[in-house]
Structures are given as structure tokens and as C-alpha cells.
Length: 193
Image 1 (cartoon, rainbow, N blue to C red):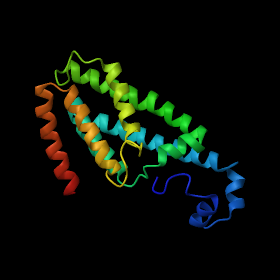
Image 2: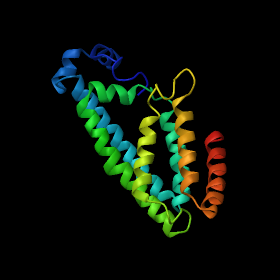
Image 3: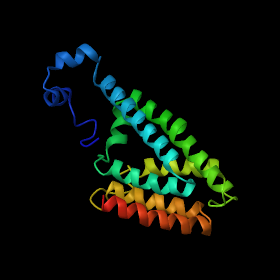
Image 4: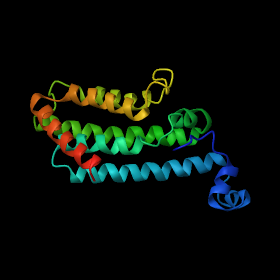
């Protein structure tokens, strides 16, 4: 997550763990399998965090505010080349990411948006399927250094701006007012733990 996938070698992994490369190869066929396994574990942890947020949130708006904080914490130390490296060099892990994006993140987003529409917090005229897909692509788009040069923007800043744009675009005035309250509360808690 921190250094990107391509720049970390099997020697680096062995050295960090204080074991030989031979020991790693007793458990994993190659680096591709290591990356896929780590990606699976990471995605499982993310899914558990999403589920915990969903249970904790009193409504769809609070869930969006808590997801914003979670995303900010998660992206703080992520290397922007992570998704590019995964797509280009680790097809198995990339496939896992695409499945996770569609099956877990998208479905969670669709459910939350439907709840928000039902409760009058999100616009009833919004096409949830289209907007959920758009949001997922925004997340991935933020990793594209040709669109957002790293010497100009940080990944967390890009994601925060895209998230705010999305949230404000789907909410009603009632939802926006509640979101601003939750956001102020979670920012205070996040910056003053």
C-alpha cells in the first residue's frame, strides 16, 4: 500500500519478515500469488469496515459521512501507483479488485442510496445504478496520475473532492443539511480523537 506493488521485491518482503525467500516460496508460487492473497485480506478487512459503518450509522446520510472519514484514513498512506501496478503487473489481484468493486462496494452504495431516497435524504429522480457506477469510476480515476499529477494533488485530496461532489449531487436540501452536521461532527472527532 505504501510503496506500490512494482517497487517491492520478494527480497524486500523476505528481508522485512526476517525470513528467506525460499520460505516465502514454500507458501506462495510467486509474487503474483502474494499480491493476490494480500489484496484478498485487505478487501475482506475493507468489507468488514463497510459493514460496521453500515450497522453504526443511524441513516444513509450518516453512513456517507462515516465512509468519507474511513476513506480519508485509508488513503492517507496509499501509494497512487497501487491500482496501476495491480492492473498492469498482477492480473489475478486486479480481477479480485474488480469483483470487490462491483460485488461489495457497488452493492453497498446502491443499498445506501436506496435507503437515502426512501428517507427523503437523496434525490428521488437520481438513477442509482448510473450514479453508483460513476462513483466507483471516480475512485479509480483519482489514481490516474495523468489526470491528477502527484506533484500537484494528493490522492486523499482528490478523493475527498470527488466524494464531496458526488454526495452533494445526490442529496436533497434535507440530506445536505444533515450531512453537513455529521461532517462537522466526524471531522471534529477525527481531528480530536
